[in-house]
Length: 123
Picture 1 (cartoon, rainbow, N blue to C red):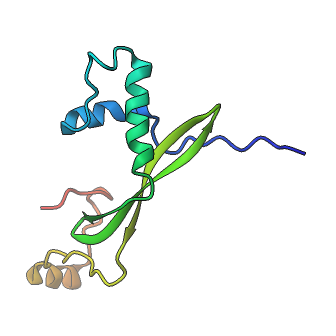
Picture 2 (picture 1 turned 180 degrees about the vertical axis):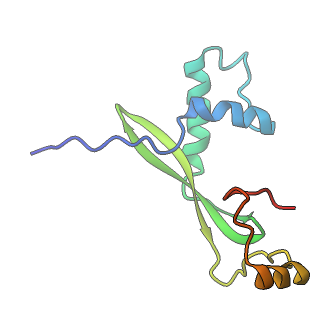
């Protein structure tokens, strides 16, 4: 029995990628060639499809890793593209700001200030 495959909402369709490509100044379909939105979607979809599973180095919050373009089935012959990010295990987390030793000593002496709200902006 053929069951329908679940449709994914993960990722973006080619038309949703267009503003990102325009903002980055890459692969903007020529209006004289791609006169309709559907034609522009086809150009962008072809570019994304050609680059599926290609791995590129990335840096996220100071940690090194790799990004891979993936695709999810959105039903009715539609695809949604997204990046799968894998961070290197050997990468150390970014250094945390050093705490003020005087502040730590005050907290030990009198305890945290319980009159202030639970969330306070960092100084």
